[in-house]
View 1 (spheres, rainbow, N blue to C red):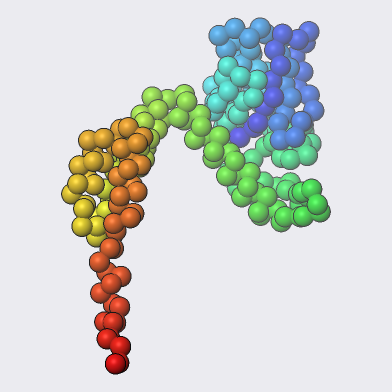
View 2: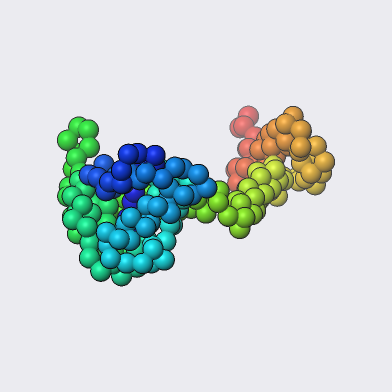
Length: 212
């Protein structure tokens, strides 16, 4: 995988220096319908000694921030190994990982730093999957529906789990008027106030009459 920071419409094609975890690549093509990305793929293919079909654009085809997957490069450009944070990975632990220092002097180990970057990359993949594919959007809708349903029937669930003697009226109030904020709040308060109402008195010792 190669992280790219692209810039179209320049005077000449340049594979520049790295910026953070991204490799700067400038191309002369104009950013129209992915032409600049296609030109960049051909430029990198010639530099790496592979066919353009061996380079897949994982995401960012219409964005300056891209991630490319290169299959079996014949040779690697030396610029790939000049990144402060590695811009070239082969699916295993990145070779050039140094300790990262946070404000205040806190230092984390290379393994933890690698886990943080992998988690961030996974979040980016998930975000692109949700926004760029219909399956991701449908999955997001299903998750939102399940969460919203759970929140909606929360007063009824609490009434039944806490053993409220008014659990049936609370359930009806929750289902019929829960779509209004006042109805949902009323059902929730009713469930909390009446839940376990008789269980507290059952364990109390009987009050004895005072001696006369």
